[in-house]
Length: 201
Image (cartoon, rainbow, N blue to C red; front, side, top):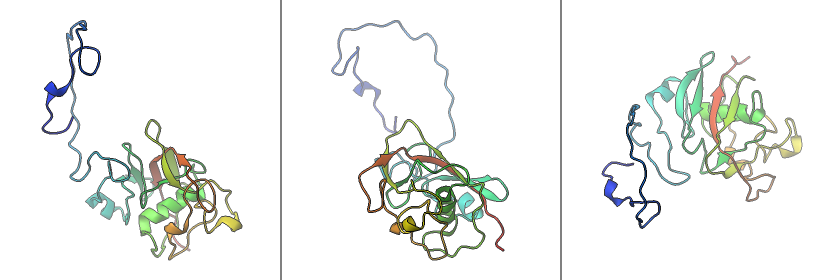
């Protein structure tokens, strides 16, 4: 429910419009309440709904783009981004649910995107401890193409798992869908990415 809700709008019985159905009565209810969501984190449709705004925690952790996720400390001076309502996203698209595990170039590159921002200058590179976790139980969405083999030179221009990003990268060059050139494929969304960075040099 949202603020200003009216319980009397619900139907009585066992179907919309109501009927004469009767049930056993409710004898007990137990309630627990978590903290209120941060300002700006509201319900809505993809891709703008359930998107965490940038927070002071994100800034303290050195995150330039939180990809709609909640920023939390993780690992050795690293961070995690979590969004369990609709998933992490960039420019209206989710991320591939393939090749997203620990040490994948796609996970490492997503961490680079988050820390340095699109077209940013890369300082410390992402470590092989970077990992993503797919979010189950929510609608699949259009996604950036990442389902290619590590080191596949011919797909560096279109696939986020082909090679590690370099300074000045533009994430928008990657294709959307499940192939170079793009298609209409949809994947389960990315619910969390954990990021750690190795000292440069």
